Image (cartoon, rainbow, N blue to C red; front, top):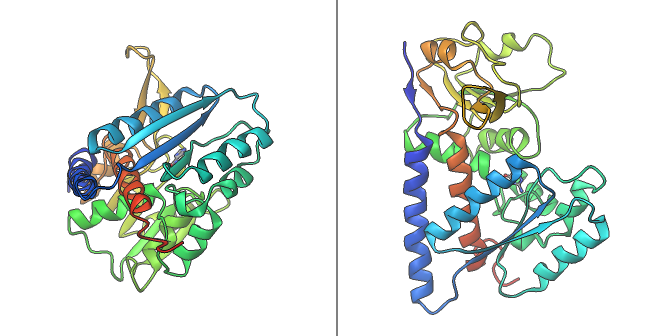
Length: 297
Ligand code: GUN
Protein backbone atom coordinates (compact mmCIF):
# COMPACT_ATOMS: atom_id res chain seq x y z
CA UNK A 1 0.00 0.00 0.00
CA UNK A 2 1.11 3.54 -0.61
CA UNK A 3 -0.55 6.22 1.47
CA UNK A 4 -2.75 9.03 0.20
CA UNK A 5 -1.85 12.47 1.55
CA UNK A 6 -4.02 14.30 4.07
CA UNK A 7 -3.40 17.75 2.63
CA UNK A 8 -3.43 20.22 5.52
CA UNK A 9 -2.56 23.15 3.27
CA UNK A 10 -5.62 22.60 1.08
CA UNK A 11 -8.08 21.88 3.90
CA UNK A 12 -6.78 24.78 6.01
CA UNK A 13 -7.37 27.08 3.06
CA UNK A 14 -10.98 25.89 2.87
CA UNK A 15 -11.45 26.47 6.60
CA UNK A 16 -9.95 29.96 6.29
CA UNK A 17 -12.26 30.75 3.37
CA UNK A 18 -15.28 29.81 5.49
CA UNK A 19 -14.02 31.86 8.41
CA UNK A 20 -13.31 34.82 6.11
CA UNK A 21 -16.85 34.77 4.77
CA UNK A 22 -18.31 34.49 8.32
CA UNK A 23 -16.10 37.38 9.47
CA UNK A 24 -17.23 39.48 6.56
CA UNK A 25 -20.89 38.74 7.33
CA UNK A 26 -20.26 39.60 11.00
CA UNK A 27 -18.69 42.92 10.09
CA UNK A 28 -21.40 43.74 7.55
CA UNK A 29 -23.92 43.39 10.36
CA UNK A 30 -22.21 46.34 12.02
CA UNK A 31 -19.85 44.54 14.38
CA UNK A 32 -16.17 45.40 14.60
CA UNK A 33 -13.70 42.87 13.18
CA UNK A 34 -12.63 40.13 15.63
CA UNK A 35 -9.32 40.88 17.29
CA UNK A 36 -6.60 38.47 18.39
CA UNK A 37 -3.93 39.67 20.81
CA UNK A 38 -0.74 37.62 20.74
CA UNK A 39 1.80 37.80 23.55
CA UNK A 40 5.25 36.52 22.67
CA UNK A 41 7.92 36.36 25.36
CA UNK A 42 11.58 36.08 24.36
CA UNK A 43 13.27 35.32 21.08
CA UNK A 44 12.71 31.60 20.43
CA UNK A 45 12.99 31.42 16.60
CA UNK A 46 10.39 28.66 16.25
CA UNK A 47 7.90 30.63 18.37
CA UNK A 48 8.46 33.75 16.27
CA UNK A 49 7.88 31.74 13.11
CA UNK A 50 4.63 30.19 14.47
CA UNK A 51 3.36 33.59 15.55
CA UNK A 52 4.11 35.02 12.10
CA UNK A 53 2.03 32.24 10.53
CA UNK A 54 -0.84 33.03 12.93
CA UNK A 55 -0.88 36.78 12.27
CA UNK A 56 -0.60 36.20 8.51
CA UNK A 57 -3.69 33.99 8.70
CA UNK A 58 -5.51 36.69 10.71
CA UNK A 59 -4.78 39.13 7.92
CA UNK A 60 -6.15 36.74 5.33
CA UNK A 61 -9.47 36.12 7.06
CA UNK A 62 -10.14 39.68 8.20
CA UNK A 63 -9.27 39.17 11.86
CA UNK A 64 -7.36 42.06 13.36
CA UNK A 65 -4.23 41.05 15.25
CA UNK A 66 -1.57 42.60 17.38
CA UNK A 67 1.61 40.97 18.68
CA UNK A 68 3.22 42.21 21.88
CA UNK A 69 6.81 41.00 22.08
CA UNK A 70 8.19 41.03 25.62
CA UNK A 71 11.77 40.46 26.76
CA UNK A 72 12.50 37.10 28.38
CA UNK A 73 13.57 38.98 31.51
CA UNK A 74 9.96 39.95 32.21
CA UNK A 75 8.69 38.83 35.61
CA UNK A 76 5.71 36.57 36.12
CA UNK A 77 3.81 39.45 37.77
CA UNK A 78 4.52 41.84 34.92
CA UNK A 79 3.30 39.29 32.39
CA UNK A 80 0.11 38.74 34.38
CA UNK A 81 -0.55 42.49 34.49
CA UNK A 82 -0.25 42.60 30.71
CA UNK A 83 -2.71 39.69 30.39
CA UNK A 84 -5.17 41.35 32.80
CA UNK A 85 -5.11 44.50 30.69
CA UNK A 86 -6.15 42.50 27.62
CA UNK A 87 -8.82 40.68 29.66
CA UNK A 88 -10.31 44.07 30.48
CA UNK A 89 -10.04 45.46 26.95
CA UNK A 90 -13.45 45.24 25.27
CA UNK A 91 -11.82 45.45 21.84
CA UNK A 92 -9.76 42.28 22.40
CA UNK A 93 -11.64 39.05 21.67
CA UNK A 94 -8.92 36.42 21.84
CA UNK A 95 -5.66 36.28 23.81
CA UNK A 96 -2.86 33.90 22.88
CA UNK A 97 0.28 33.61 24.98
CA UNK A 98 2.75 31.74 22.82
CA UNK A 99 4.35 28.76 24.58
CA UNK A 100 6.85 27.77 25.77
CA UNK A 101 7.47 30.59 28.22
CA UNK A 102 10.89 31.20 29.81
CA UNK A 103 11.40 28.70 32.62
CA UNK A 104 11.15 31.32 35.42
CA UNK A 105 7.50 31.96 34.48
CA UNK A 106 5.04 29.29 35.67
CA UNK A 107 3.19 28.34 32.51
CA UNK A 108 -0.07 27.28 34.12
CA UNK A 109 -0.31 30.49 36.15
CA UNK A 110 0.09 32.54 32.97
CA UNK A 111 -2.61 30.49 31.23
CA UNK A 112 -4.93 30.81 34.23
CA UNK A 113 -4.49 34.59 34.13
CA UNK A 114 -6.25 34.66 30.75
CA UNK A 115 -10.01 35.21 30.89
CA UNK A 116 -11.31 31.77 29.81
CA UNK A 117 -13.80 33.52 27.49
CA UNK A 118 -10.83 34.91 25.53
CA UNK A 119 -8.73 31.74 25.74
CA UNK A 120 -8.71 30.89 22.01
CA UNK A 121 -5.98 28.27 22.59
CA UNK A 122 -8.35 26.30 24.82
CA UNK A 123 -5.62 25.86 27.45
CA UNK A 124 -7.38 27.42 30.46
CA UNK A 125 -8.56 24.82 33.02
CA UNK A 126 -12.15 26.05 32.50
CA UNK A 127 -11.96 25.14 28.81
CA UNK A 128 -10.02 21.92 29.46
CA UNK A 129 -12.60 20.86 32.05
CA UNK A 130 -15.58 21.72 29.90
CA UNK A 131 -14.04 19.92 26.92
CA UNK A 132 -13.55 16.83 29.06
CA UNK A 133 -17.20 16.72 30.13
CA UNK A 134 -18.50 17.51 26.65
CA UNK A 135 -19.61 21.08 27.31
CA UNK A 136 -19.11 23.95 24.83
CA UNK A 137 -15.55 25.22 25.15
CA UNK A 138 -12.64 26.46 23.11
CA UNK A 139 -10.98 23.34 21.69
CA UNK A 140 -7.18 23.33 21.48
CA UNK A 141 -6.29 24.03 17.85
CA UNK A 142 -4.03 21.08 16.94
CA UNK A 143 -6.52 18.33 17.98
CA UNK A 144 -9.48 20.29 16.60
CA UNK A 145 -7.59 20.67 13.31
CA UNK A 146 -6.83 16.94 13.20
CA UNK A 147 -10.50 16.04 13.62
CA UNK A 148 -11.41 18.56 10.91
CA UNK A 149 -8.87 16.93 8.58
CA UNK A 150 -10.22 13.42 9.26
CA UNK A 151 -13.74 14.69 8.71
CA UNK A 152 -12.84 16.40 5.43
CA UNK A 153 -11.46 13.15 4.03
CA UNK A 154 -14.43 11.17 5.45
CA UNK A 155 -12.14 8.95 7.52
CA UNK A 156 -14.29 7.03 9.98
CA UNK A 157 -13.35 7.19 13.66
CA UNK A 158 -16.33 5.52 15.34
CA UNK A 159 -15.26 2.30 17.06
CA UNK A 160 -11.73 2.58 15.69
CA UNK A 161 -8.66 2.06 17.82
CA UNK A 162 -6.85 5.40 17.99
CA UNK A 163 -3.39 5.39 19.51
CA UNK A 164 -2.03 8.75 20.64
CA UNK A 165 1.71 9.06 21.20
CA UNK A 166 2.49 11.87 23.62
CA UNK A 167 0.37 13.12 26.52
CA UNK A 168 1.01 16.86 26.37
CA UNK A 169 -1.60 19.41 27.41
CA UNK A 170 -1.51 21.00 23.95
CA UNK A 171 -1.96 17.92 21.79
CA UNK A 172 -1.99 14.41 23.25
CA UNK A 173 -4.30 14.85 26.22
CA UNK A 174 -7.05 16.94 24.53
CA UNK A 175 -6.71 14.74 21.43
CA UNK A 176 -7.44 11.64 23.46
CA UNK A 177 -10.47 13.32 25.04
CA UNK A 178 -11.91 14.47 21.70
CA UNK A 179 -11.29 11.09 20.09
CA UNK A 180 -12.83 9.09 22.89
CA UNK A 181 -15.98 11.01 23.70
CA UNK A 182 -19.12 9.13 22.71
CA UNK A 183 -21.30 12.19 22.42
CA UNK A 184 -20.01 15.05 20.28
CA UNK A 185 -16.62 13.36 19.92
CA UNK A 186 -15.03 10.85 17.58
CA UNK A 187 -16.26 7.70 19.39
CA UNK A 188 -12.92 5.93 19.11
CA UNK A 189 -11.28 3.58 21.59
CA UNK A 190 -8.15 5.38 22.70
CA UNK A 191 -4.74 4.31 23.94
CA UNK A 192 -2.32 7.00 25.12
CA UNK A 193 1.40 6.24 25.05
CA UNK A 194 4.12 8.38 26.62
CA UNK A 195 7.71 8.18 27.70
CA UNK A 196 6.95 5.59 30.37
CA UNK A 197 5.12 3.27 27.99
CA UNK A 198 6.87 -0.09 27.72
CA UNK A 199 7.12 -1.67 24.29
CA UNK A 200 5.45 1.12 22.33
CA UNK A 201 5.23 -1.08 19.21
CA UNK A 202 2.75 -3.37 20.97
CA UNK A 203 0.35 -0.41 20.88
CA UNK A 204 1.26 1.29 17.59
CA UNK A 205 0.97 -1.97 15.64
CA UNK A 206 -2.68 -2.26 16.69
CA UNK A 207 -3.66 1.33 15.77
CA UNK A 208 -6.30 2.03 13.12
CA UNK A 209 -5.53 5.72 13.63
CA UNK A 210 -2.10 6.73 14.91
CA UNK A 211 -1.56 10.27 16.17
CA UNK A 212 2.07 11.02 16.90
CA UNK A 213 2.94 14.09 18.96
CA UNK A 214 6.14 13.12 20.70
CA UNK A 215 8.57 15.74 19.39
CA UNK A 216 11.00 12.98 18.47
CA UNK A 217 12.08 12.89 14.82
CA UNK A 218 11.65 9.54 13.12
CA UNK A 219 10.28 7.85 16.27
CA UNK A 220 7.71 5.80 14.34
CA UNK A 221 8.95 3.55 11.55
CA UNK A 222 7.22 1.25 9.05
CA UNK A 223 7.63 -1.98 11.04
CA UNK A 224 5.81 -0.37 14.00
CA UNK A 225 2.48 0.11 12.17
CA UNK A 226 -0.07 -2.12 10.51
CA UNK A 227 -1.17 -2.05 6.87
CA UNK A 228 -3.88 0.54 6.21
CA UNK A 229 -3.30 2.67 9.31
CA UNK A 230 -4.22 6.37 9.17
CA UNK A 231 -1.21 8.34 10.42
CA UNK A 232 -1.31 11.89 11.75
CA UNK A 233 2.15 13.27 12.35
CA UNK A 234 2.05 16.28 14.67
CA UNK A 235 5.83 16.54 15.10
CA UNK A 236 7.55 19.62 13.72
CA UNK A 237 11.24 19.02 14.39
CA UNK A 238 14.08 21.16 13.12
CA UNK A 239 16.96 18.89 12.13
CA UNK A 240 20.27 20.24 10.93
CA UNK A 241 20.64 20.19 7.15
CA UNK A 242 23.54 22.12 5.68
CA UNK A 243 22.16 21.71 2.17
CA UNK A 244 19.28 24.03 3.11
CA UNK A 245 19.57 27.78 3.13
CA UNK A 246 18.31 28.02 6.71
CA UNK A 247 20.66 25.26 7.87
CA UNK A 248 17.81 22.98 8.94
CA UNK A 249 14.80 21.15 7.56
CA UNK A 250 11.49 20.33 9.19
CA UNK A 251 10.69 16.71 9.82
CA UNK A 252 7.94 14.90 11.64
CA UNK A 253 7.90 12.20 14.30
CA UNK A 254 7.38 9.51 11.67
CA UNK A 255 9.85 8.12 9.20
CA UNK A 256 7.71 9.17 6.24
CA UNK A 257 9.24 6.83 3.66
CA UNK A 258 8.73 3.58 5.54
CA UNK A 259 5.44 4.52 7.29
CA UNK A 260 3.78 5.83 4.12
CA UNK A 261 4.40 2.49 2.40
CA UNK A 262 2.03 0.81 4.87
CA UNK A 263 -0.42 3.58 5.76
CA UNK A 264 -3.65 4.26 3.88
CA UNK A 265 -3.49 7.97 4.74
CA UNK A 266 -0.72 10.14 6.16
CA UNK A 267 -0.10 13.82 6.91
CA UNK A 268 3.09 15.32 5.49
CA UNK A 269 5.44 17.49 7.56
CA UNK A 270 5.33 20.33 6.78
CA UNK A 271 1.90 20.81 5.24
CA UNK A 272 -0.23 18.58 7.45
CA UNK A 273 -1.31 19.46 10.98
CA UNK A 274 0.55 22.83 11.14
CA UNK A 275 -1.68 24.78 8.74
CA UNK A 276 -4.79 23.16 10.25
CA UNK A 277 -3.76 24.37 13.71
CA UNK A 278 -3.54 27.95 12.48
CA UNK A 279 -6.88 27.71 10.65
CA UNK A 280 -8.61 26.45 13.82
CA UNK A 281 -7.23 29.42 15.73
CA UNK A 282 -9.05 31.67 13.26
CA UNK A 283 -12.26 29.73 13.93
CA UNK A 284 -11.81 30.06 17.69
CA UNK A 285 -11.13 33.80 17.44
CA UNK A 286 -14.37 34.29 15.54
CA UNK A 287 -16.24 32.22 18.15
CA UNK A 288 -14.71 34.44 20.84
CA UNK A 289 -15.79 37.62 19.03
CA UNK A 290 -19.31 36.29 18.65
CA UNK A 291 -19.35 35.13 22.27
CA UNK A 292 -20.76 31.88 20.93
CA UNK A 293 -19.36 29.58 23.62
CA UNK A 294 -20.03 31.70 26.68
CA UNK A 295 -23.11 33.69 25.75
CA UNK A 296 -24.34 36.33 28.13
CA UNK A 297 -21.16 36.27 30.22
N1 GUN B 1 3.34 26.51 21.24
C1 GUN B 1 3.25 25.43 20.42
N2 GUN B 1 1.98 25.25 20.01
C2 GUN B 1 1.24 26.24 20.56
C3 GUN B 1 -0.14 26.59 20.49
O1 GUN B 1 -0.97 25.93 19.85
N3 GUN B 1 -0.50 27.69 21.22
C4 GUN B 1 0.39 28.41 21.96
N4 GUN B 1 -0.07 29.45 22.64
N5 GUN B 1 1.67 28.10 22.05
C5 GUN B 1 2.10 27.02 21.35
